[in-house]
Length: 96
Image 1 (cartoon, rainbow, N blue to C red):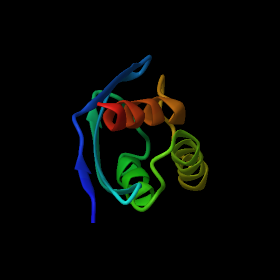
Image 2: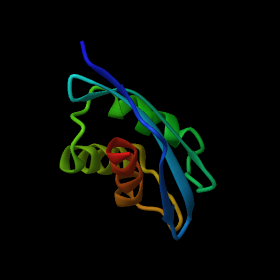
Image 3: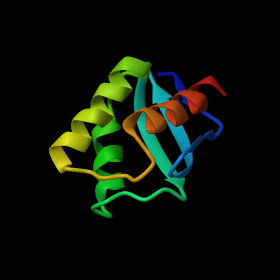
Image 4: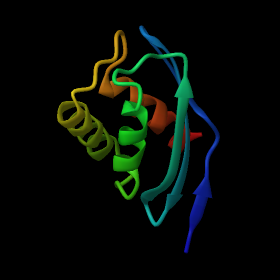
């Protein structure tokens, strides 16, 4: 059982800074935290994103699709920040 703890992945979007901390187990997201100074509406949207990312394969395409699907399903609005910005932050954490 391989568990990999990563450094923070930091990405600056037009809407603010996004920091991701990711734990990977067997190539999938075991645990993830995202923080920063971006805005999401509704306010609990970040929890929906995090919940849906757990168990997702740690590759760019699957992460982006998962986040885009969550945006659509939960009707998430994020001024200046897109699903691709969250994906970029997560990928930087994985590459650290």
